[in-house]
Length: 443
Image 1: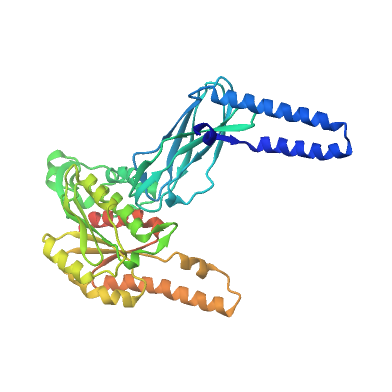
Image 2 (image 1 turned 90 degrees about the vertical axis):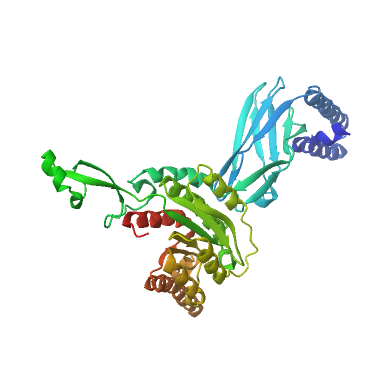
């Protein structure tokens, strides 16, 4: 039974069979062909038996292994490798069909490769998950054909391999060095001009070109008979909380990911930058209630704690309760902190409903509201209009885009900082804003 289940007839066998049927039809017209056709049938089945012997005499014809990362990175391309070793003493053709997790909805996956006798090879493909959670791989099916190509023998490996998908740790590695660099041009991050000197004094050093002349220390200059300047460093151990709205407004998709997942990926990267800048990073999420809380600390295990918490954020996309958010912050965050709130407002009416609570938070803390541009509207705005309906659509799209800018101006009136960004630029813009606040010393 096991033998029958693993045996598959190849297309080449059926092509030969169709040719034989055509020859039998011709034999009605040319009777002399009849015996020759039966000889071809005998040859075909002789080769079929030989092909079966070639593939099944070896108990372990091949070995195969799926090499997946310990965890997948959400929203990024993740490499999956397949390693195959040929134990046959002749070259083989392999067709690899991997049972990919159902979340990807890939139903036509196939790799076809050739292996020489006793050769070992590694093949690869990439997967881009768009939601967090557990991803279960099924069997790794490898169909092996001998040089005769009449049949295939199926080998199955690596059943039920589970790989969790975490927030984008690939982005985390990509931006890891940003915390140590003052020249951040390589990733498009702008250089921030320092305003004022609310940083901690570090040392007196000799003046070099580019130092701020306002930091000249005249007493030390007179003593040394050389220009000396005071050197400052950023204030450390300030509390920064990253608040994620996981309500209905964050359900909108962009390039396969929801706005919520973009916010989660950005939170992970920004928390790492905050900790590398010697500040204390904390997170929480809210919709009907405030949960998924990690208090702002600067411990060695803080990033792992944040990563696990972000991985476990789940939501039914309820309407967000900003009054509960305000009460929770008032109760649990006593020290003045920087609060970066990831949310989304589409209209001024939506903002005005929540504005009293945002103003209340901004009285005690430095509040930054991060919200999103609707990039789908750009296609409508930039499209050439030919009909009256298209003109109406374009005007409405421009109105919505203008309203986003009005929201940013309205927040600014009440001393609330804002970041209006496209989803793909969210991480860079959020890091920029944090570095700007650090440079200006306004916390």
